Image (cartoon, rainbow, N blue to C red; front, top):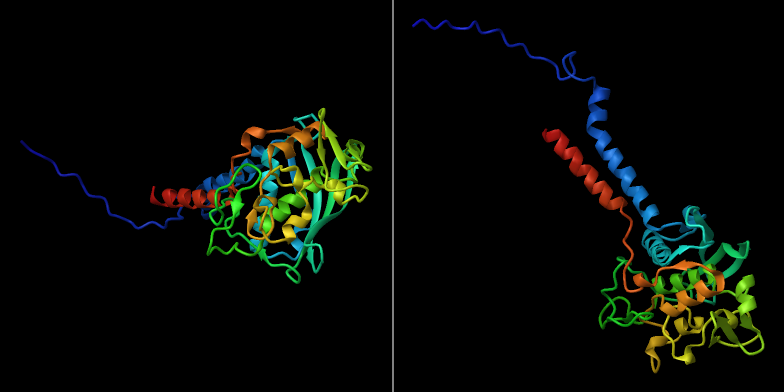
Length: 307
């Protein structure tokens, strides 16, 4: 049986970018496009998760905060955006509260110094935070978790664990969340809050219920709940941030972390008509997925190079 040998053709080396291969531009697009798509999707996902309410930090680039402080402020945004899903009753439209936050030497730790409203709904706010001249803050490097604090209850996460960096310091995350509470509604300068609070008696009426405010007449006092009312929550007196935790550990202060309570949300929902989600009070908001998206993009690039 005769077996004929096939004539072996000469092997010629070809450039990877010859006419038989994609151009450099096409090659780059084919490798990078999955990564680009992944990053875009991951950036957009948090916006969808926050439903139709979000903060717009208008002066972020010039605020003066470092990267760690900025991450804490954005985590505070995440908490409120998780719990308030709509401001005006129309979930189809995005509700944006524009806010400026700056650090400076101030004797009041932090505060919302000005607000505006549109249609009696909070619209803009201005916040200042002490730059460290007068106060020592605990700047949590992982603000979406609270491993430095003992587990507490809804409205009060807990006091700082011995030996943690939070001991003896004011929790910046709690402070920012508290001040954002004034920006979204706990504020005598808003029309609906003013109508619900009695300047003479210092009593707030909401949804057929009443609760004592910190005091009477003074706008700052009328913007806080009275801590002696034995309620837990984020919107108790601002002074509790400036006093050591002693006899009343649930009142906030040094080495203490607070979170929003059902009462905080009930008040905002009753007075302003906000749509709130109390089922998420014991949840922790997801951090930005941009980092996760970046890792996924790198994995896609690696896999495409192996194929």
